[in-house]
Each structure stands twice: as structure tokens, then as C-alpha cells.
Amino acid sequence: MSQATLAYVRVSTKEQNIDRQITKMLELGIEERFIFIDKASGKDFNREQYQVMRSIARKGDLIYLDSLDRLGRNYDEIIQEWKHITRSIGADIVVLDNQTLFDSRKFKEMNELGKLMEDQFLSLLAYVAEQERNKILVRQKEGIAAAKAKGKHLGRPAFNLNSLTPDTRKKLEDNYERWSRKELTSVAFAKLLGLKKNTFYKIIEQYKHEIAAEV
Image (cartoon, rainbow, N blue to C red; front, side, top):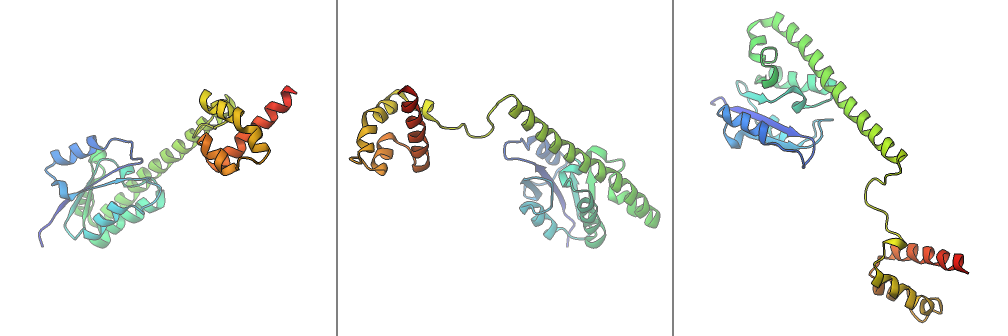
């Protein structure tokens, strides 16, 4: 079986751009069909395309990564996956942004000493990758806390009485008494206002309080 050159590309979210990583791999002469792409968190290895690549990798194959954190960000699992690919499968890994240190072919040439050196470098870099992920999580939490402290609403904006359009507001005012006298059902009233059930009852409660405050 001929040896294959593979590449693994990952970004954490669907919004992030993969073009830079893909361009690097194409410039290395890697065929598009051998570039495996995930848009998923690096917290674990339950990623569809990573698992596909892992399943087809064979002894003698060469796998390129842009950086070690593209492989993952979990300290223990990065080491486990690296060793599985390079030692159990017998493929090789090259990390482009640190190719001097992270080219498993070089470590294999040094036999047992190479394994020892590889373990040391891998532990250091995997630890750095995990710490960076932890920093990202901390920054996210701090950003959310700061936004809340400033009174900013995170997520979908809350819908309330003041969110109604003038036309919907008028329909509410014109038909509220009919609804109160049960001449208009809640389902029909909500449909008239174009509101979902939960939102309808929330708006009605707010309107009741508004009326009471005016009395």
C-alpha cells in the first residue's frame, strides 16, 4: 500500500475562517481529498473528520498540522493521540509552526533517546496548549461578568411590552377588555397580536400592571 500525505485542519466555530490553514496544506502539495476539516472545539477528540482521518491513517503515512492546538487542547488526550498515531499506527506527524521540534520522523531516527525527547517536548507543548484554552475560558467568563455588570443583556433580546409595534400595541388596547370579558379567547388574542403563547401571557401581565399603575 502506498504511503499517503494527510492534513488535519480545525477551527473552534463555524464562523472562523479555515482558508489560511487550507492554503498551507495545498502549498505542501496535499490533495484536497486528504485534507480533513473540523469546525469544532478542541476540548476533546469526538470530532467527525478527525476520527475519519484517524481511521484511515496507516503505517508510513504523514500527517500535517498547522499548530499543535489544532490537534486539540486537552493536555492528556493530546499526548495519548500523538502516541497512538506515531507509535501504534506508525504514521508520522509534522507541526508546521514548530517543525524544528515537532516532526516525529526526527524522533524516530534517534530510537529510544528520540522517544524520551519527544515525550518531553510533547508534554511541554501540550501543557501550553491546554493552558491557552483555560485562559480563553477565563476571558470568556470575565467578559460575560463585565457585560452583566454594565447591565448589558446577553443572548436573545428580551421581548416585552415596549417591544410591541404601534399597530400591535393598538390591537392590544382595543381588544384587552373583550379578552377580559372572555369574549375573545387567549388563543385568538395571541394570534391577533402575532405572539406565541408564553410571550402573550407575559405581555398581558405587563399590560395589567401598566393599567393598575394608571388607576
